[in-house]
Length: 220
Image 1 (cartoon, rainbow, N blue to C red):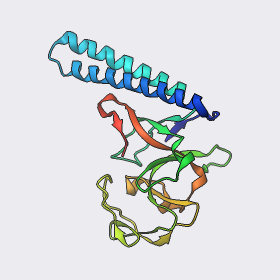
Image 2: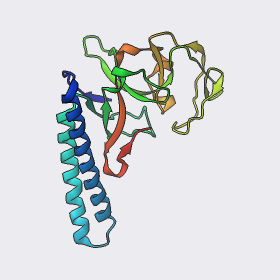
Image 3: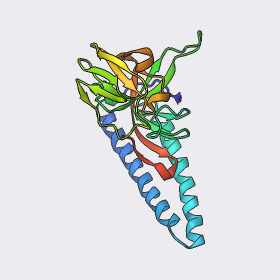
Image 4: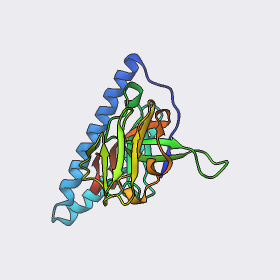
């Protein structure tokens, strides 16, 4: 996965409140524009569909501008370049990830997170990966007979691409660590390969897919 981010100063006090209102307004306007785009594209009128394409182009440009503006403060933008989270995330998906969430709280089970991980190529910067949180500190995770168990209970996972084809003996998640897996379980470089993830490496929570327009929406 290719992930672009900048380090920026946190926004505090009233400035943070104002920024939040401005961001909410901008997102609201984008959603309205997206609704107009969807309505026009469902029309049988060629002129309406042409206008729909224009609205779609304007939406994409404004979404990119918004991403570039707010990214240093609370958001990152990332582009999916692998199949490790298929079918939840596909190659070419463009996402927004909330950097502020985990400043106040721990990741939750089921969250889709971005994080840094040491590159396997010496001398290169850390890789930025995206996976789903399966186990929190204190949880015991085991993978056997094609299913993932957490604290001895099998997980209901409608989001995975196929049953797991490998086994992992029971592993207790230590303090300050997470157990993460890709939704494309058999094609993902994750905790079943390199073990637990240091909580300090977590960057953001993936929250919203803004491209392609046909798959725009929240990420779960």
